[in-house]
Structures are given as C-alpha cells and as structure tokens.
Length: 178
Image (cartoon, rainbow, N blue to C red; front, side, top):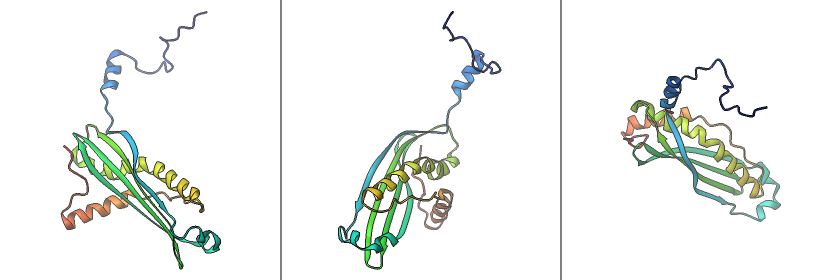
C-alpha cells in the first residue's frame, strides 16, 4: 500500500493546468494586514475602591466613541488606527474610562486610487474591530465591572461623515498613499 497522495487532486473537477496555476499565482489581494498591535491602552477608575461599595456603578451610563485614523508609513503601506473610548459614569461622577488605540500596518495591493479611502476607513477597521472589542471587554471585566461588549460599529457611516467633513474643511480623510 502506498501513502503517496501528492499527485492526487482533492477536487478532480478543478482546473489544475500549469497555466491556471500561474494565473492563480498572479492574482493579488486588494490589501494585506502585515501586523496588528496596540499603540495605547489605558484604564482609569478614579473613584475606586469606593465605587464598588455603591450599587449605582452597575447602572452607569456608558458612552462609546469610535474613530479611525490613517498614516502613510511607506510606499503603499498605511497604518490604520482604530480608536475606542468608553466612559462609564453615574450622577456621582466617572466610574471608569477605557481608551484604546489599536492599529494595523496594511499593505495596499493593486487597487484603483479611488478605492483606497473606503478600503482604509471601512474594510480594514471592520477587520480590526473584533480584536479591539475583545480587549475592551476583557479590560472592563478585569477592572471589576460588568463586561462591556461593544456593539457592531457602522464604519460606512463614519466614512461618509469623514468624506462630508473633508469636503467642508478641505482636510483629507485618508493620508496620501503613493
């Protein structure tokens, strides 16, 4: 019995000619996240430990702000930073504040120039968001509070707001990519 299965194709219907394999090798993705990293991450609970002896902290109002920034770091390489701030407060004051700047270094593939802003302000943040969401959830729990699960975020809406702001103020929403 032979264990040599290197020549067998798991999908006999597939086109596995050398020409099709070369074409598949030529296909390039529109972007690739080269690395992901935390740029800044902080937790403050200015009223601890007293806040834990007051049941009102469980009823805190939580305000969440999300933003995206870009910075060109090389030829067709852009740092996309997802910034999240969560602030829990009661009528007695701030319960806790979480600030996170979570970034990815993104290599931009062969895409038209007009596709770059939505790629960097919508698609890449959608890829980074689950990681940032998890970090915020764990930190709120580790801080002694109820776990804060961030709701899915509308990056398309943020993109549209940034584009409208760009038209009004003339500042680019995305750093210039060569």
